[in-house]
Image (cartoon, rainbow, N blue to C red; front, side, top):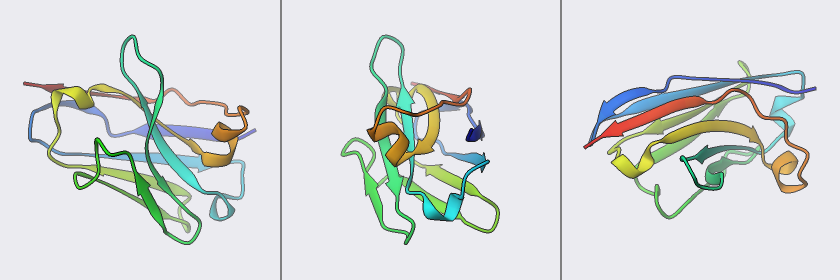
Length: 118
């Protein structure tokens, strides 16, 4: 079963930056499209950014131009660089296989909390 360990969250002021990391194991990482997702209190989990096996990226409208997703296939890590953070970015952030999420078979890690103060 896939193992996902997210890290890098924290408390920042609006306008600040954070870089999240997600270490992935027990799957063939380089063959998987990967994504970052977030869940704010009282809200559904939503897709933030995705990166394909070839490096093609997709972003939610709310983060496009501020967030950048990347991956290191040698280290089995997917990153999310977050700049220009806003209070509405406050959430627990998770990574996962895009396919697993799409077919409802995702196993989630513990996530990493991002809190943006105004």
